[in-house]
Length: 297
Image 1 (cartoon, rainbow, N blue to C red):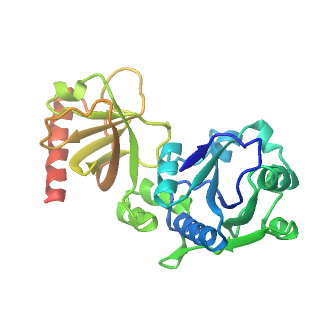
Image 2: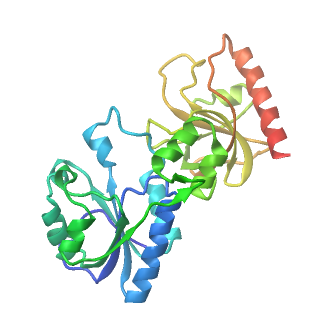
């Protein structure tokens, strides 16, 4: 899959283009990408996706923006798995926010990307002040595929619904909305080795964003290995409170440093807690490991 981190200055090969934030890659996103690859094949076009970094709400209102479900790398991995041939990552900044719907359609979609078909959700808005809608695409004579909302158990599937399920600890509901367990990926980096000192060595997974959709202690799988993870700020440890994802892989003796890993969240064990002493913390970690082992039996 080709990845473009800027809008090309020369006209590209004709493409079918799906546009959106694609945060979480839920059932609705999956339906859109399936339709994209189908349409591109039938029209003999390149299949392409346009997404935005950062999320527009992170740019406009960072203090109240929703928790991120996917890092950019994770989104790109999903695009590739879906069979997308090209991905355009648009840097959402003040300049981009001022682009009018008409400029977006003519200068970017037509003159640069050579988009012959546009695929979006039925409520898609675009351009400065979100003034553009699917009606603008139709008036501009684009070949438009506007997908209706996808429902699950009588309710609309959305990134917000996924976030709410994760925040409530309803991992099975989130997995149903995603058609897979919710996961976070990142590189394993060196930490303070506190877990090792407590008898529970951990893989410290680098977090791309400081506001995750879930926190607490979980039974997880790290690249398929049964594990227990803590995602939070480690309130018992003195010092700077910084978000961390620490994963203790059960019965594992290998070296994970420097590897890019995927952590699947399968079962919530408890909320993050502050303990009076490291001995109390160690006892609780031991209990958490027992719960995780029972879950995987």
